Length: 194
Image (tube, rainbow, N blue to C red; front, side):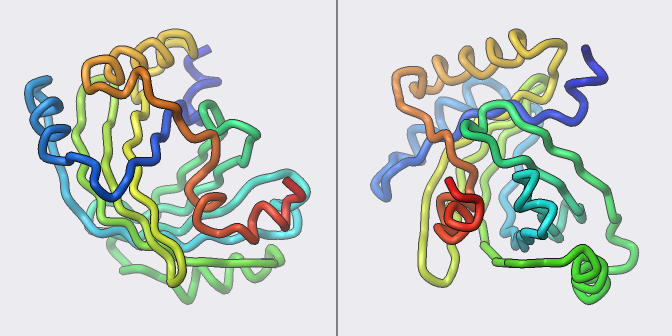
């Protein structure tokens, strides 16, 4: 089962309002003793290809101070559990946007869009918790995400999410079943017929 879960993302996303009390949230998380924290600005470039439209997945190119990845993410009715396959491109050659664009063009890109995120992340042995403000040229959203990183089973991963949601006051909140690109780029839903 562990091998099956290696390429699965198990997370809960909560959309929060502009007046969300981030200071109180930070305090709750810091009391849980994260092993590491991070604050960065990320630019994610998303691509929809013909096969991605058929098979319901997006490709993401991310280059930031911590990661340089090309990622395949499936678009499910509910993004709680979905495939996520990351290829580490490394930082040694820079962002390589032209090479990534040329590579993906050969796959038949039908749509692309870029979003920017200001992320604050807290890392624990079994979970990553992030708060971010994500924006495109026309839309903005604020979210808190809980992503299980130690996944011995789906049930254990979901239990981890629930435990941290309870400790941080999110257990009673309704979560979003949409991916961030589906929220910020309504044309994705149209292209996928959902």
